[in-house]
Image (cartoon, rainbow, N blue to C red):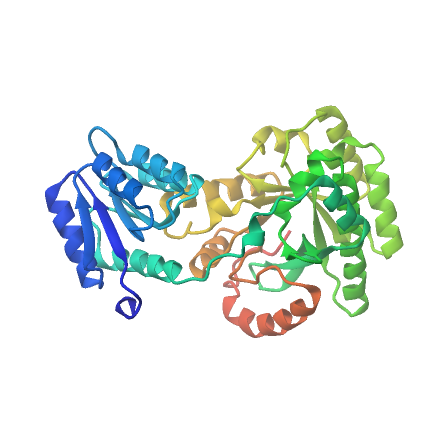
Length: 414
């Protein structure tokens, strides 16, 4: 229960006196009796600036005179406000969701984006999330460390990079189809380091080819091990655009497959555009030659970054991965649902296999099933894990999947 947790200190900001009284009364019913109210954002900002740690929760309207809620949120971001934020507005849903994304981009801990009039149930969920976060242990300080190119080079050379695997399953049957290889750095002092901490360093220091080679070799060796154990899985490996400027790359991939003793059909290369395409002609040359070698190509995080319709026209992709930002919550968000279904329909008409990333809820799983998406990946299915943990996950998934199968009319995987 929310009232069993330590009470939060809250700040409510709204230019309408009635709304301030309403939100204060609702918070009090949830056990938050220490609420400061401000009828304008400037006064609220002054309160926070005087003592940034005073409030663990801020409930803020968007539409206010003089300083609106968006400007207020920007100032909170500049101050690195450590508490939770709940956005409240009578504006249309798209404006509210855009403001939510903007607040997250400022590094703020958004616990809710609620439409007026706010229901007690919605506010209770947001307060519960804020209260839970307020009692969570702090992240270790080592998470802020910045690594150098020399350190990353030593990690590659010393075999400190390890692959974790996230399962991909068929939506129609729940059957496991493959895994995506996700590199981690097993640092001798800092423990397990996530890829966003070192992939960019590798790209900026000319190390991405060596890094991708290490990930690819390890993934294919693991895939051969699974095959020998009677589990012929496809394995996906992410490649940067920086990998796709060397005309020798297709040959290197073919050699790695031969050493592992695997057919090219077992490998999917996911094209991830972390940086702009430096040489479009060379990239198209390399990708086309990979497809001629029967290696599958997937356009990753479709709908974000630089991915575009022109790439679907020009590059011989045979798989489209819909980004998690369009999948998570699509079952109850009409805007997301429209974008998701449009992407699926377009891919299906182009004859592309479809993969939904970021599937975290049963309702989204069912929506994807109903609209013929081929494959799913996400926390609802399984988190990234090492190869040992994957064995345990498989046993658990086999017990879960009979209840997740689609109705008989769903088309089979292409």
